[in-house]
Image (tube, rainbow, N blue to C red; front, side):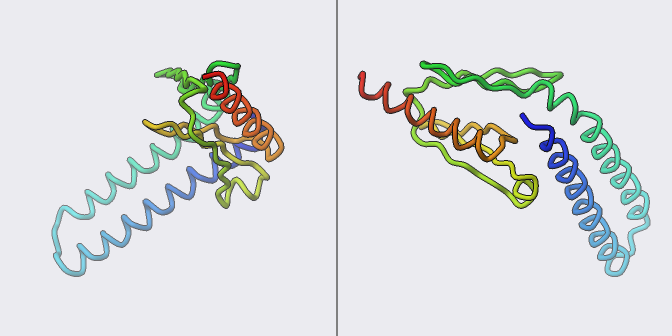
Length: 153
């Protein structure tokens, strides 16, 4: 995973925080101007502190997320690992993969990164923060493996 993904995760955390604060301010304004409830300022402050703590924890966890999110592709399965405190490893059999998409949001596009979205009949799995070349290469590799496995069946 390239280091640039850390910038994307940081930007996502900040944007999420700013949107949460904006929604909080709008709700505060509506409550103050239309309902005049006395507990609204206290509730607003508590929520603002919670949002700020969530932002700080997300920023602190970026290096750990970077260090512990991994994937591996072999001829029979795709292994995805994520999580620091609660580690989760998912094994997706190649034969179960239906199709693979490349996805690029506006923040990832600014850093020339992409994600691979792997679809199975039951769910989707995502590999975040690949360079465009790596994403294309891994997509082609997965498609070739799926075709080879389906030819054998």
